[in-house]
Image (cartoon, rainbow, N blue to C red; front, side, top):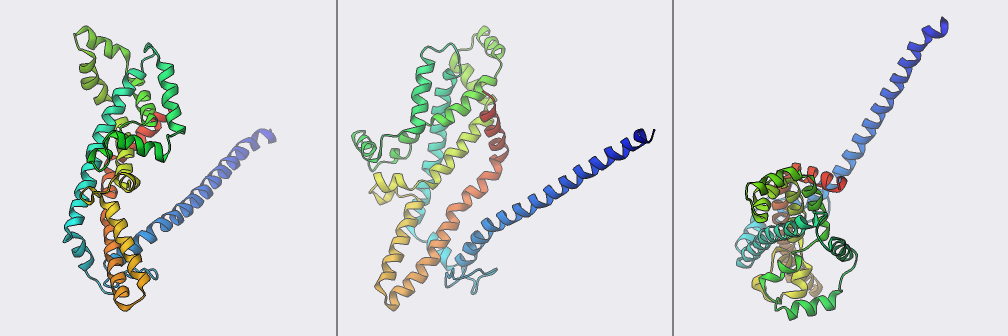
Length: 303
């Protein structure tokens, strides 16, 4: 009888230990998340403060600017080259996302069908592109032979295909019931009508996921301009920022007072440009985050 009476107390003890362990884990997790958040937020806040500072100084952390000014941002927005660069960045990101998403969806839809002839061969070829590339020089020669050098389309056409994104979309398309597609075919819908009216609307989480992936990559892309574009009218924000940094370093190497003043002024403009560059992504990401999380999980787990 004594043993029977002790069982509830033993179970209660186990529950208390589990509860205590869970609370310890939660506290430790919160502490780590706070530390990681500070590691990310503090440098960003320091850049924001310095961009509103008259000196543009980044010598140490400051909660507020030492001398608040909007001159750095005025210098950015009154520069015609900066407005053109902003337009190019927005245009190549918008056109690139639409073209890339549609192209990958057109490739992924037939690849999601088991009856597609040569499917294994196409899949093997796609997987190879995920691990191996042609190299910088052969790629440059290909871009040149296609006539894409110093054109806007050099940002769009070479980035149309990504087999990683195709895999995500394939897994989404496989989740759509075949009975739904068969019903549409019985009603006389063509493959194009099924794809545009049924497949794409039901796969919005997947489309939003790869759209976000490619949008961030397009917005932050710098090497494409560096390698294939010499026309300054086609420079995006990232290349414009690179030129500002190079001018600042060249001025600093002169070592005279004028160079120091130029370096200080350029530093503030550079930091302002950085803030302007990252704000669109910070605004856009929360809007598509719910699609992004769901799309990544479903596209990765279900096959």
